Length: 106
Image (cartoon, rainbow, N blue to C red; front, top):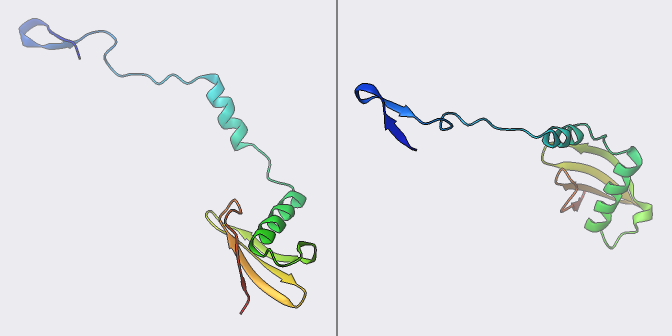
């Protein structure tokens, strides 16, 4: 920081070295607005995503026979139940349905 001395030893800042203002581009506001206002997925899209995650976790089961129930999405985890024939599973994954895992229901 360039300093110069004023009268009687005062330190005076040069112009432009005070607080720096953050300049926000209109494009940033548009991007934030679009991200905040994007519509939630349709029920069909959500069901397809859950079915896909379940098929990843249960590759040996026929995906067409999945009966999905009790889906809940939290801030860091999603969970749901799946019935395939006479077998029942409890499944979970992260909030974006990545890394799904299904265990036989006790």
